[in-house]
Amino acid sequence: MSTTYGNNLKLTIYGGSHDEKIGMTLSGMPRGEKIDMEMLTAFMKRRAPGQNAYSTKRKESDIPVFVSGVEDCMTNGQTIEAVIYNENQRSGDYSSLYDIPRPSHADFAARMKYGDKVDLRGGGHFSGRLTAPLCIAGGICLQFLSRRGVQVASHIYSIYDIYDIPFDPIHPENNFDILRSNDFPVIDSNIGVMMREKIEEARLDLDSVGGVIETAAVGLEPGLGEHMFSGVEGRIASVVFGVPAVKGIEFGLGFGSSGLYGSQNNDPFYTDGKRIYTSTNNCGGILGGMTDGMPVIFRTAIKPTPSIGKEQNSVSMSRMENVRLKIGGRHDPCIVPRAVPVMEAAAALALTDIMLDD
Image (cartoon, rainbow, N blue to C red):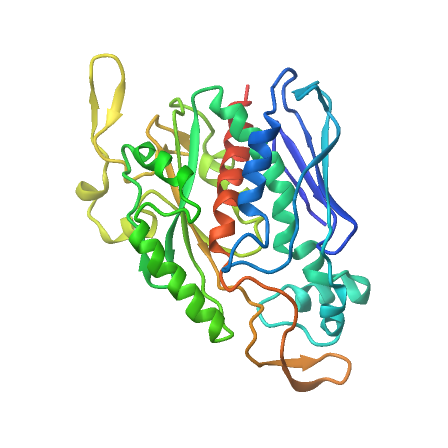
């Protein structure tokens, strides 16, 4: 399976949702980088399951245990390896999946590719559980970036048809402190109440909802990245699409720019005599695959959790018959809130990899 990302950093994620442990290796991180373990643990907790009423009831502490590459909370230049021990698996909830695939899950495609030996307990290696080791690597990268004046933050841009206030495209950092202090990561707390009500409505109806996450990075120097296949958009998107629930990404105005005239979409340049800026940021801080010094802003579409309590149509693969399926187990009625730190981790990983370019 293709589970490695990066040019300068090399991140490999391993394990399955119901294995004894899951983990990651990260090579290429410079020696002498301090890791604040308390800060990393707090970051991991934001993604961990079982924290509130709108997430799965599966309880996992998600505390990373470092096996190598870190001495006295400092990177030593060797490959970093960290593991998370799974503590609350209930594999029996998934015994029927080898015959009856869940709609919109990887079950069917994985069986077709890997055969009946593939591990589908809790989704196996295709589960969102594997975003936990991604957050270990991303959490380390967030600290690496912060020491270099780069800040990354995300918020829930929408849940179903309810929208938060978008980031200011010129100064998104104005809302970073608000987001860090909110348990439910939105800019407008009143909108957050409405979003939680929508999630609860879906849960009570044995259904689920999706949404959009908006991410911003500030403090990046102009000229980072490359053109064509090594562009900033592509390198960020490559990590983001490694997250199972992601179905779309757009930078700046994204698809909205297709409905504008060039005179409306272009970002005019100006200078204060010391540095060059743009008066708007429709491009999302990226031109020709390279940073232009303005905030990098992107939005990610997260599909509704496919595991729902409603009966659905599926197929018995052994009998080749149409059947009805009712999914058991413990599932999020909305994965979006827990995916917010995952998007921060993905952005931080990609941006750190880019900053390490020669």
